[in-house]
Amino acid sequence: MEATAKPVPKPLVWVADSLETVRSFPAEVKDEVGVALLHAQFGGKHEKAKPLRNFGSGVLEVVSDHRGDTFRAVYTVRLAGRVYVLHAFQKKSKSGIATPKAEIDLMKQRLKRAIELHTIWEKQQHG
Image (cartoon, rainbow, N blue to C red; front, top):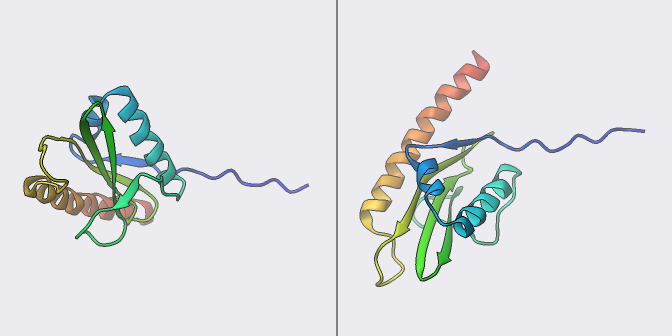
């Protein structure tokens, strides 16, 4: 009888204050973000995870509404072997669905940092 290998989740890497921010979210939002990240760790995509516009493939956003507030978590699966959580925030603006430019700029900066961290990690794995 052949044993089947259990799938191994990809490690989560929290960039900057993303973990602390998610921990500050309401319990229902934390649960939703957590389930979405678990899907990503096993190579899947949660139904609420949508590609983030203008970031290319592999950068996704989970939007969770809770009691009239909107919470977002952004992560990338672009870098092999790991899931990087780039940013999490509560959307303050009540008008429109567009993500504020300051948040977009921060996500771009953190994606760049995730690529740097990933490069270091890869060198450690092969060095």
